[in-house]
Amino acid sequence: MNEHQSSDERLDELTAALPREVAPPPELWTAIRAELAERSSNARRWDRWRLAAAGLLIAASSSLLTVVALRSREHARAVAVASTAPASPAAVNVEPQLPARLASAEQGYLRSTVALRRKLDERRDSLAPSTVATVERSLRIADSAIAEARSALERDPSNTVLAALFTSNYERKIDVLRRATELAPRT
Amino acid sequence: MASALSLVRSAQTTQSSELAPRELAGEAALVDRARRGDVDAFERLYQLHAGRVYALCLRLAGEPVEARELMQDTFVHAWEALPRFRGESSLTTWLHRIAVNALLERRRRDKRRSARVSLVDDEDDAESGSIASGFVAPADVATAIDLERAIAALPPGVRRAFVLHEVEGYTHEEVAGMTGLATGTLRAQLHRARQLLIRALSL
Image 1: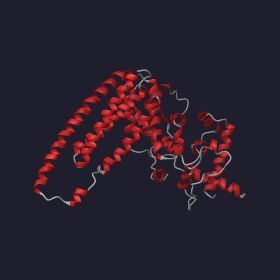
Image 2: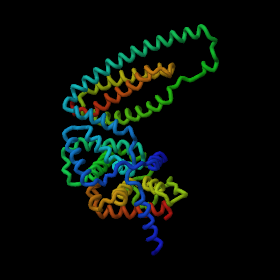
Image 3: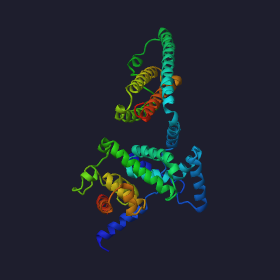
Image 4: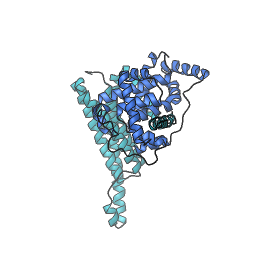
């Protein structure tokens, strides 16, 4: 047996020992199932798209209103605290930040939106201008709602309602993008 | 790549896809139900085959983020194509074909993606015959983890050929059919893959 043969045999041995199965990330089926649910409704895609866009408008408006209301409440609470306690220099210098869990979730959302946005841009020319305008308007609203929720969360990171609004606004934006990428040409 | 390796390290085998006759009959019933739109049946099929398909996706992609996307593409396409599944091959083979097609489609659709791969594509690297710079030969060469890393560092086309033929055990003709390569090209890629791996692992 020469040296070359033994190298090949060693490689074969290592290759044969590789695991045939690797457990996928546990949340992957949930993502697949969600996509299947969307695709199963393709026949009613346009109607549902318009509903989704309208829903987004309503949801975003609702989110904004809620955020504004919460901010007002937080502001009132902050004023009350400020009036009864001396200001801490350390607190003044703290940079507002998202909680780590949400910051991590946001990274995932951003990756998805970037990928979907790229896909949408690739087929933008095949869509009717009015559809593109509707999509862009919905996305602007979604971005505005996300920014509002994000800003409020940075000031009140423990607020679970704001956290839910923040993530749901991202999910709605992704939903709009995904539906837009699946629209038939010239719709 | 470290995260890819950690995924492999923490790999847990799921249910075997080497199904007994009774299980095959059960699988056929699940396929029938899934064809009629039963997502729960499709979920069961996913559970049965996810381990084998994800292993392939991870090795074809060479990194876990794209592997996840590829896995999702594969099962979504499988759901849509299930009415056309005739049972002429095993469901695993059929799913593997879909995964390979999904990968090729992704490569065609998004050339920019290749810039993220650590090595130049084999078509552009035909003369070099070497593992790209940046690949660091591991100190302990006699482990499967090192081989996983070395496979992931192969040029994409060479990696595809090696994974399908040497790891998954498909014949030259089957791999050629899946990838659209001529068998002569495939044999050359396999030879090159072995050379690169032997060199990388200092075997």
